[in-house]
Image: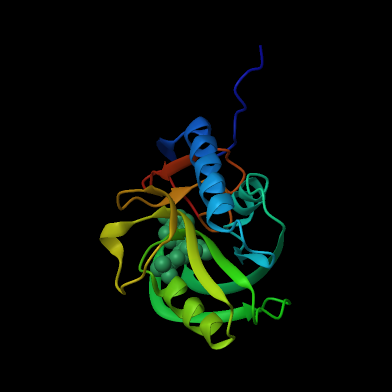
Length: 186
Ligand code: IMP
Ligand code: MG
């Protein structure tokens, strides 16, 4: 029997979403995307670095369509506060004109990131553009955005794991956990 891995983070509050729950949900989203894009020959998964990496690599294995993958890096976040300003740090390489693009992020908080990146991508004339996010803090949205494929809605906790970080820590947890801010030291 394998023992549970122990991760060296002492700021974990509790496990919010287990590894099994994630696997089931990713599988279901993959099936849905496979069905929705059955006629697409130019499907691009466009992930936002770095938080979406674990999600996108799991998800792509569940999508039974020809596809390619690309990434963008944007920043809108310092520690645990969000501003409405979103900066493009590095752009995608693919010319997305005529492609069916699925923009993939780890979590939607205020919604500014998805809102801003979506607007920019639309100017580049993809054939279609949909949004996929692993997590959504619905109560925190400050702009209206549509999420076409969603993993889970969560309450207003700061979470880490499955790619998500707090100051770059916690990304390697295979589940999603809340951060206990009283235990967190920078
Ligand atoms: P938004 O632009 O406010 O929607 O922020 C989205 C970005 O903030 C995400 O891509 C994450 O990088 C980051 N973020 C928001 N909430 C959390 C969280 O609870 N844990 C880790 N990162 C978060
Ligand atoms: Mg992010």
